[in-house]
Length: 112
Length: 115
Image 1 (spheres, chains in turn red, blue):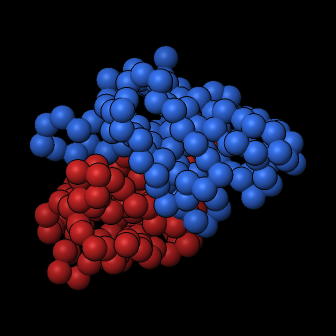
Image 2: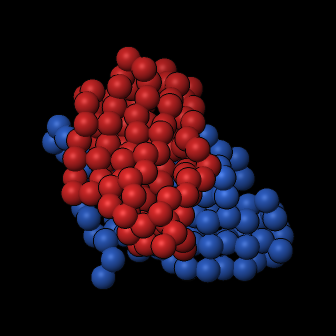
């Protein structure tokens, strides 16, 4: 089966940089995905890493190390609107490669 | 209009009642999913469907059933609702065409309370 570990809460100040880590154990692995969810809202897709290394999309970057079964989401120049929950999710071979198993989520609080 | 629409947005029902949550999508995606979200537990898969004739159980399917009425419609039923099914329910879609992976598109969710 699959299991994912991520911190339950992280607090940072506006303008700072924050890193949200995710470690996983899986019986098969295609890639690691990240989703953002504001309170009361739907999860929205942020990024996907299939290969080792860093992927950058604006203020957000995502990193993967397949050998360490580890990834992280890096948020730079934090803004108040970044306060949300962030979920990592493993994409597995199950279901022909379109199955996601989600971590428990990290609640990010950005303070002024 | 939203790409993935869930109805109702909120529902309160009594223990033992049968209830149906509906999901429709205009993405043209072939794959549809139902997830349940509880605080601190992330999103857990209830059922998934890769086309109209393909329905599969997820990790927490007990007490639930689904119907894929068309490629664009996927409904979730609670046969006899119980209080521990109180949760936020999400429908999601994904596309199996092509070689890339572009993530899931989620609906806005249905907040279900069983009293």
